[in-house]
Length: 256
Image (tube, rainbow, N blue to C red; front, side, top):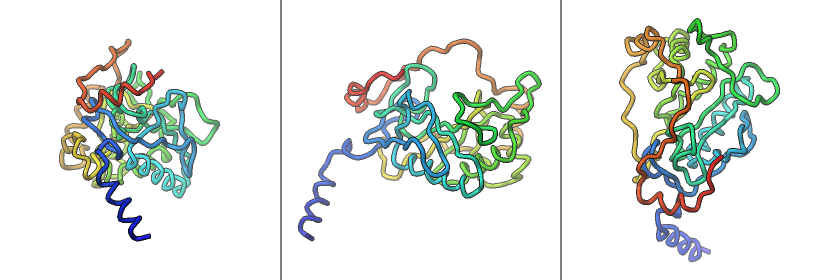
């Protein structure tokens, strides 16, 4: 038995890197190997838009989402709704997101209440008045706070008004700096994890600035009423990818 175990261990180390789960390249120009699918449902979460087949992530991200689901249920929150993660081998989408390419990004819809599974996310912002609407409340704040407290998180993109609401509620909590105001994100928040330890082919993003981010930076977004995506279609994002991505993406079916 011991001999067999040693042989298996040697074989595991002898396998090429592509035989292990790995994020390759950058969040907006990369791919992934041996990704795991997020189950359709689990403790405290449900997967949405499964027909797009964008529910594959690195093991660390799948574990993060399942852990967050359990925390959400323990807090008495409705099941969180997980939308786009990445394609099976990663890489750029046919349209939409620029990131979500290495299995380390995930979109989580903001839902009002615990009704039937919605077909789309619910906007939390009155864009005409540039204020949060009645759908944003304690449930949404708690879920974002739980999401941001995990040390594996690099940053979470939220609408500037949502960032402002989190700052007012949580004061100087050390994890507030991970919440980054960004265009769009008025009906969902976008979680991005750090490159996993030992993932040498993963290109990390620069660290977030020190502090809570609730001061001048946020004020500039609020004063300019930034946060809305520009109207009209966007051109598909076609970055230059690492050479290691070519054989992987050649195996991949086009996304819808």
